[in-house]
Each structure stands twice: as C-alpha cells, then as structure tokens.
Image 1 (cartoon, rainbow, N blue to C red):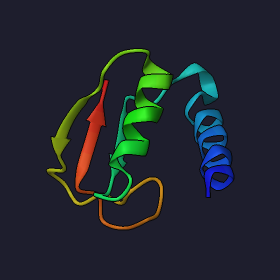
Image 2 (image 1 turned 180 degrees about the horizontal axis):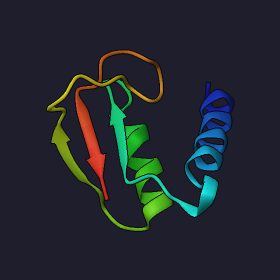
Image 3 (image 1 turned 30 degrees about the horizontal axis):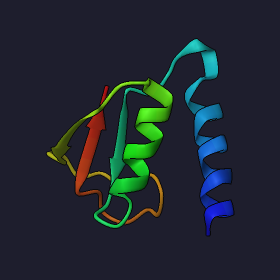
Image 4 (image 1 turned 90 degrees about the vertical axis):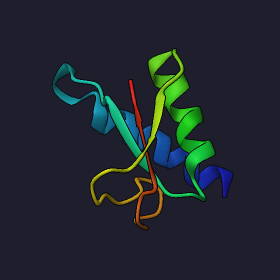
Length: 72
C-alpha cells in the first residue's frame, strides 16, 4: 500500500509541476485526509488551509467523493 501511494505522489507531483505551475488545491475523502495533509506539507512547505468541500469533487487518491479541500 505504501508503495502504491509513493508512486501516486510521484505521479501527482510530476503532473502538478507541468508548465512551471504547481497545484494549490488537493481534494480528499475522509479516509485519505491524513495522506493529503502529508502531501500538502511536503509540496508547499507550509500548513495547508483545510475546509469542507463546498463543490462536488473527487478524492485525488481514490476517486471517492471528496469531503475536504486543502489549499495553499
């Protein structure tokens, strides 16, 4: 499982840095909020703002309905 998420983080980071742009939001379900927090802190080097998802989104880790959004 750790290897699967490690590969996802690498893929996610690569996709987010295309064209010199970085991601400023991560959507996560209840199950993956801790992983999303780890990714956000690693990428942004600061604590993210965590809010309830206001719009329908899917979790970036499992494609379930996102409960939270993390922003820079």
